[in-house]
Amino acid sequence: MKSVEQHVSDLLALVAVPEATELDLLRAHGTVLAEPVVSEVSLPGFDNSSMDGYAVHSADLEHASPTSPVRLSVVADIPAGDPSPSAIRPGLCARIMTGAPMPTGADAVVPVEWTDGGSVEVLVERPATPGGFVRRSGEDVEAGARVLSAGTLIGAGEMGVLAAVGRRTVPAVPRPRVVVLSTGEELVEPGRPLGPGQIYESNSYMIAAAAKEAGAEVHRHGFVGDDPVSVRDALEGLLLRADIVVTTGGVSMGAYDVVKEVLSRQGTVEFTSVAMQPGKPQGHGTIGPDGTPIITLPGNPVSAFVSFQMFVRPVLRKLRGLDPAPLPAVRARLSTAVTSPKGRRSYLRAVLAPAAPGAEAAHTVAPAVRQGSHQLSALADANGLLVVPEEVTELPAGAIAEVLTLPGH
Ligand code: AMP
Ligand code: MG
Image 1: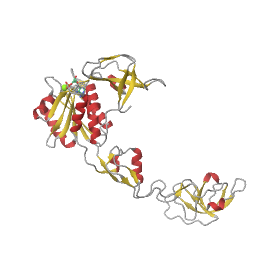
Image 2: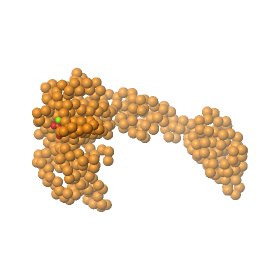
Image 3: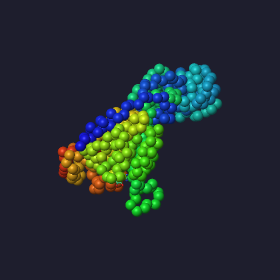
Image 4: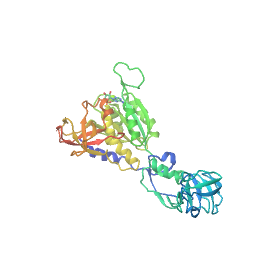
């Protein structure tokens, strides 16, 4: 059997980091910047007030105090967005709002809280520091400065910076387009009545959600039955939409394992057994005229989920221009004993929790009771996958084990 690591590296070899394109700001969220972003503007672009108050000559207020407030005439009102505030001479002031441009002459702002709030004349009870409550042009970003580096993952903060410096588009790696297709004659769309022997189709919803969580743009095709023609037609129809195709089901040793049957014939997809549990039967390769990468996951829902996290997620990260790192791992103390087949690495659904302060491992981990690869219920609660190495067949309660943390928790 092939090792998990070997399979990961074979899958990563299937795809190349795509070229960056100029993406509209709205599409750039969650993508990786391909080039540094240099600001063409200064932030702030002009001196402006950081408070609602009065723009003043600070020298006028040298002796202001609550017992002898200084009286100034208010000669203008400057709202945010005022294109040309008039200049302020000594002895005078202007009412000014947060973000409004400083009038020439004035060198400080007095917050309205230090005054009687007058609109014709104002009494000021405290002296003003030169430059006080004024945001200087360029104090945040100088025009020509680099605001983001190449390789940055564009999150909410980066979106704010890009918009603030006026960028409409950025060179970034677009999200990979993933098409998800399930197979199985027994499957029924959720919401419809079930017939005898039928089950609700869950893999395509689950894998589409996991792919979205991994940063892909997802097209959930749904499912097709177990006949070769439907599977071939569906795959052909999907290729236009896909940077990568992910299927579930039909790759084991059964008589109706149609994905394997259809794709083996083409000779471009390889089916293997990986030394893990769940998730042993795996397939990967390319299909169609453009050699679109395809990953075929097993049909048992938990196997499909675990295989996605171990194999598809790193591939999607590579396609996004990110480090194809595995799920982050922590070390945790096991609450109950677990067993695992010899020669296969187990990934057990588990609940990670913080350990008591001062404990040797920062976490405790409780493996789910139901670990069958068809048993979905524990997946909803699990926030980690407990790893039992290939050569280990038993871990006692209290052992320290490696746990992969699942996304979205
Ligand atoms: P297969 O790999 O196609 O033999 O499927 C293995 C098991 O997973 C069978 O019990 C299937 O009924 C079940 N299964 C396969 N595909 C799905 C799916 N899309 N949703 C829910 N269960 C599935
Ligand atoms: Mg099937």
